[in-house]
Image (tube, rainbow, N blue to C red):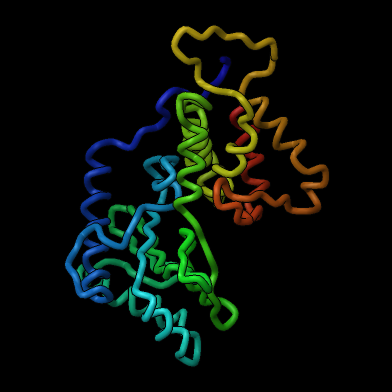
Length: 276
């Protein structure tokens, strides 16, 4: 396959991964002490976003979903004057108990923990969304402080499972995640002043990749298409929506099917053109 994408693209080095793990555990423990009355470093939390989907590079932010007890949802919902904002404040205060000199602030839907070395965690406080029959389908409610405050939903496990399945040996054989990481790398290297959403990258590549894959053991090239892989991605981008310059295309996230904002669509185009 003709491609600038490389196998096992842009891995995060061991020392950085160890530091991420240490900080993740300390943040998790701080929130667990405040909301669950336990000092567990791993309970009620999971990596989400690019890191959770296995598509992060060294410059990626670290997204962490933190599940809180549902009685806390009742409490913050009952508060007048934007209970969602008060929830972020409470989570922020719990983290400051462990990192009192670190830059910690609420920002719309998450609590951002920005360390002096540039590493940034975004903590998403959530509650399980239980249906009328008392069942939980893996969907969480999370706060949005905008417009007076409301609740939004997410299902990161479904997205992670879908990405893992399409990345496995029988499908893209690792090409899916390698491509997503390469796009992040190009954005960071050549378009660092532009924001490009990780879920937009992953959702686009998930749908654009078709049957392209890294060659498996004993498999020949077997492809008559003269286009290289990057050209295929760009062609898909250009044909995805005929009026993309006028109307922002809409994508749905893998697995969860939740709508993905296309606000960064033009930035994705810049990166794909650079790759070609």
